Length: 165
Image (tube, rainbow, N blue to C red; front, side, top):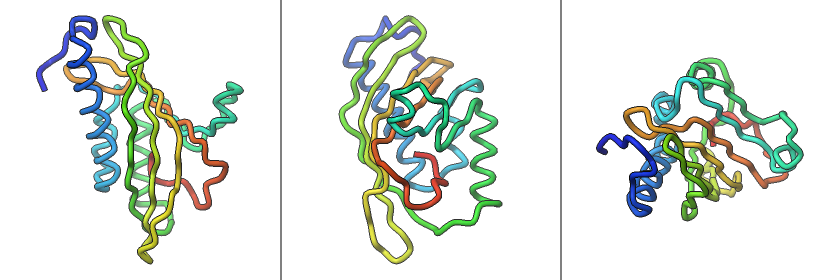
């Protein structure tokens, strides 16, 4: 993908394509269990949050996952691979149409809905999590997430939420 210097110089179609491409690569990275590459989708000073809709709507800070930097994302992946004990599973994401809700010369604000299916080692697949992604995307030689919030509608998570959404 060519360097994008300014969001406002892109046509709506070009912007949509670049944003959808970023989101597709992000979810495939998770679904293909290439989690060590996940921090590469974020700026150094990013915010990554997986939070219940109830808490997000009330501006309550408690999140199921909260990382305030790329370094914290790296630490999370390292812990997931070497320290956490959990049942092995696979995710499969389905992401809705992407809506660009605002642009400036330096960022794009994007909203999309997602569902995540989880398949356990016994081969059973089930709906694991559903919600909305609210993203702030910036340009740093390529498109990166400055902020990614996965606001989930699911009332409960029946096992430890280990893998990023």
